[in-house]
Image (cartoon, rainbow, N blue to C red; front, side):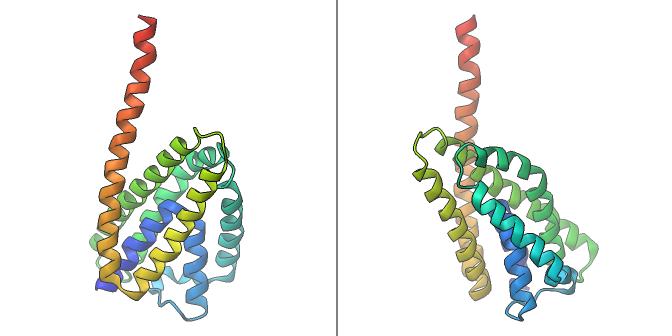
Length: 194
């Protein structure tokens, strides 16, 4: 059960950072027998899904390195990553009572949303810098986090879940800081016009 929970939470978390890379890697690893996915996620092993996810992962790899365009990409991906992360989390539970699958989808969608908004918010802040190197470092760091997180999820589900809790606490703190900054920026022009 611990591995199932780690798989569900891990797919949701990583989808908030790099959805297409997650689908590509999960499908490829499952196709070659390195990752045992439940039958409810068997469609990820399909070569069409693997190929499509691979093309999209490559497009995202490029798009995410272009300052400002990465934020535009993230804004569109909001409507894709969050529902996809919720679905992956629900389907990762396997053949369970539908109530458990719905609960996993709700929690997974929340994890994906938190991860996605922390990523998108930090990228907005990074994009204020005129040089592109910080953007590239952040992008490669996110890809490294996905690869490392998926490895930890498979190698030690308990360690992964502990690290996930730490990440979510930090993401929550980061989101409150972004919200505070955004609300101050919104209030500032209204004071100037008064």
